[in-house]
Image (cartoon, rainbow, N blue to C red; front, side, top):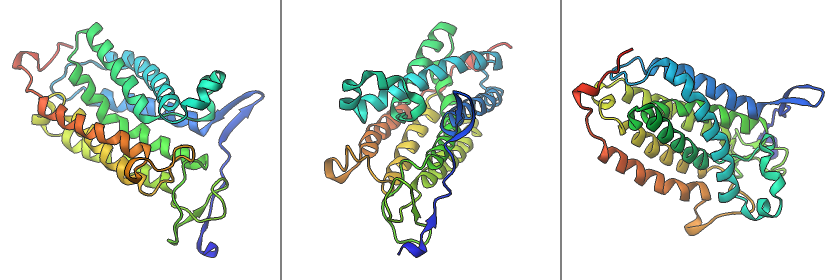
Length: 273
């Protein structure tokens, strides 16, 4: 069985280190995802209804970064390892060691959208749709970083592309990080792009946001069937993983968002540049 396994490439998690300063692939994936997302969002706001300027996208970038970092870390602490972090609060700030929860980051970005929309007097659903359309870029890059780190590996498999991970024992496993990178990154990005190209969809703010919540919930649920659940959590209700349980309300909320979406008033379909 082991002879058919693919050897893990064993890439150094640290891309570059100068003295005490280290640039890790994990952190780089977040930075690259944010900047690529800003570039893509600047292009999206050029499509009608143009309710946001490229300059406002740049301003929102900082809000998004704060929402991802604080929300993602807080979500991981509360959803995945609350006992450990409550007993070791000093470990909470060590984000460079990994440990970010997408569902927490989603809540953080949602809060950033609501605050920014209120302060700048921009339709909150319009901002949310733009953000939803670019999020898969960061998701895809983040999963690749998980693979490079040799973490969050998959369940045992006898398929020819099974891989033996350094921390996963001597059993070939699904490279589930790559599966999730493809599903959460490429597939979701393409689906949302196709929706964005439809003017009727763009003129119903909240539709693309809802599609993202539904789409992510579905692809995350699929990916979790191949991913080994966290050791300290294991399988939960009905044999589901934490990622799958958290995805159920996402799908339901996404359906509500689409049902709630209303066409923009004609007078609000474009903001003067």
